[in-house]
Length: 386
Image (cartoon, rainbow, N blue to C red):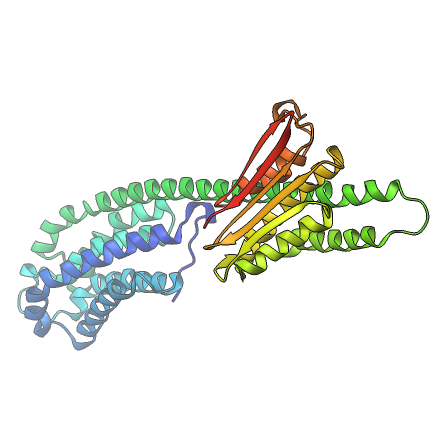
């Protein structure tokens, strides 16, 4: 039996209801222990079917306490609803099933579980009905006496006003649930906002990466091509092919955690420098230690942009480069004897040094880039450490 909750989805939270249901089930277990002696002493005074229903109600309560932390919401709602129905049936038929000698002295053990049913109903129905229910349920044993005995037994009459107090449990449980729902909504809203910001940050980083590729690769190739006449030289074809591969990798290739040796990393970075600055004096060192492919490609891209800047702005000057990929770290130094520049004077919309070299490396965890430029020349140092 699954009871359909009448509240809107915004007024519900499975995690909140599960926690409150678990709390109520554990409280019911305490009641089972407390009422065990009374219940066993009354077994002989009731019909077998009534005792069976009472035992079923206890079993459902205990099961709810055991599986409340992991059972599906529909299963929990079914168990909570079953307890409510069984309590109503047991209270309504208490004097139909009673076979004892003194109904005036009877306090049926199941009456203690009315508070449990009241709180379960808070999780299953709308607040008005949850508040009305304890006011009605308190009179069920008295109603049973009137129907099956023709009168209200003395102890039942005395205890009924006290059971009207169960409405306090309903109100407190409703207030607790309302507060927890508000906290849950606030927490969900905060998580949604955090996820939205993370998505926006990821998109911004992706767009920045694309802008770098367009600046570093596409515009450089196009700039060369525009100044050519006649057949396209092989070097431009090679650069164009490498540009397309870089663009595809930036757009769709995720970081897959691939590792390469320091020797391979050194060779890749050195090959990139030789393509752009074939006259440069190049030294290097690599070993068998492993470095991430992503770090190698990022360093390679930053170094490539630094080398292109030298080729554009200081053509014909002497260039020295050092590439080291040892002990799991990468370090590249590129020095030219060009006229130098002042980084602070470069317009913000220019992506080359500021974004494609420094920004690219500092976006990489463990990466960094430094530039020392004077009228006598410029040194760019690109590093990555695990």
